[in-house]
Image 1: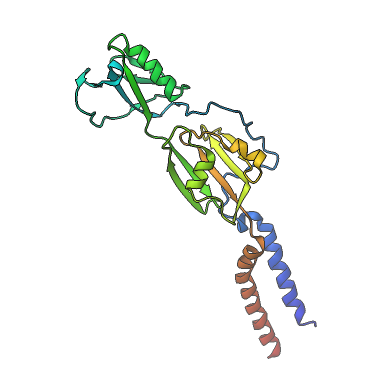
Image 2: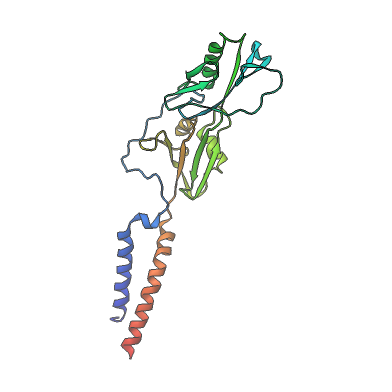
Length: 254
């Protein structure tokens, strides 16, 4: 029995060392961790349409006579054929976008429809019955599922692209993800708004019908597998200690 004591003590030391290393060793890929009592942003029912933000890129097309004839935005002349590709117009940091003829117009905070109506009103002084189409071309969201194990960049291709749609396009929620622990980071990453969603509940899932904004980050927490991870981390240590123990017994037997 006395000969087993060194091995027992060595195993105790190994477990203590692992415990002192904390969860970071068992879950080194964890991202966007928040304190236990973190004050998440309050969900607010917003317009069920995309809101134009600074640094969005807009494709703007204008027609005359309620859409009969396309206007060449760069040369301000009628174009009878379909439009050629044009560079998008950038919404600057102050919410203004510079478009031909009109100059800088404030569009940040408007929906697509509202921006189209505003531009139609502005262009009415230059063209007869202007018809404007606006499309945001740079809208993307980043989705991490299973913690940081899987990541995808998705293009927002419709005006009502919701959190649920983004999760579906990213492959859904697998067995190792927490459907009740989904974070959405929005805004400046120096001080982002952080929302928390629980789509395992029908009542809570209503909030997840949130319309996504460009550059939103969605992070689905991963279910911790402490037993398997602990074993994987301990095996090299146990093997090393066992080697030392066998060496010790060999020396004692000499």
